[in-house]
Image (cartoon, rainbow, N blue to C red):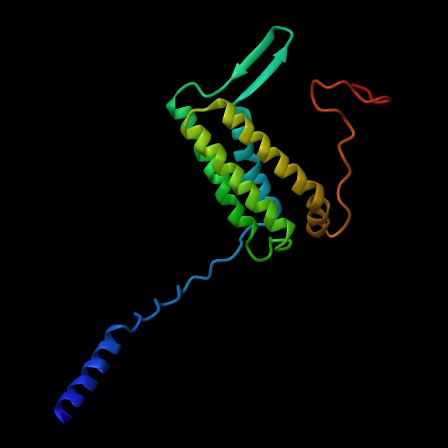
Amino acid sequence: MKSFSLVSCLSLVLLAGCNSAPPEPEKPKYEFKAAATTQDIMESLIAHMAEDIWNSVRVEIDKDGVHDYQPQNKEEWQEVAYAARGLAEAGTLLMYEGRAEDYGDWAKYVRQMSEMSLEAAKAADDQDPDRLLTAGGNIYEVCTNCHTDYLERVEMKRTGGSAPEAPVTAPPGAEPAKGETK
């Protein structure tokens, strides 16, 4: 009976040792941290990728009529999908410490931008211009809502003063405002 108990105890100890978790991997020696400002990320990455999505499927009307644009081959559709996935990933950069304005609405907008961007990527993968147009519109809406809530605050933090005034002149092709010259 004693030998059975001793064998049982040793077996339990061995089994317990087999169930232990492997040691934690060593923490990387390189510390990852933000190297660019929110403004840098917006201008260098987000704006360009969003423009690629928005310009990929569009309808333009001019004096010569209505012009429909969409990617024409597999490679062009793939480029739009890359831009959309890049835009989704850029959301991660907006959540780095020092860039995230808060973990409420800011995080909500970033998450929505990423989700809508993945919808755009899927539409591009499926070569579906209608879904891509809709997804691009949804991305635009999220960006506009975020800018309405945060642009002035982020700009003031960046410049240490007040936000810049809106441009005084109309964009190319637009009629000048009352009192403005061309």
